[in-house]
Image (cartoon, rainbow, N blue to C red; front, top):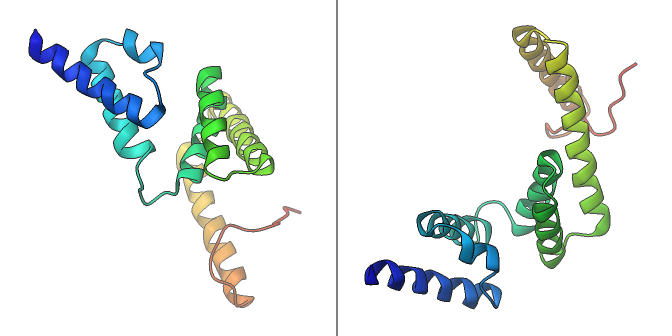
Length: 148
């Protein structure tokens, strides 16, 4: 039992050092879940990884909107701002989440054939790559593309 308490105390000390306090919700988590959650947060979300912090937090904003988590929305919005995100970037991330949810809802509700969708998506990607190559541009998402 003492080892478990020592482990919890160590994790709480890490959290306090990183965040300035141990939020109550961390204290209420069962120890194994709390240690695992903090480990992922510390080693992925708060750590320097291939994805810059600003982008990770903008992803967090989008996911929190899709999952309708106001706790996550507040946390990731503030973290994104600390990482340099502008209000416009936060708005775009939120709008992208909404657009993705809209498309997902429609495609799933209509029971769209996945194989056809995948085939058409690959054809679109190849078309856009050819168009960009003809214009001497590096392949990227179709910027400003309009469907006529």
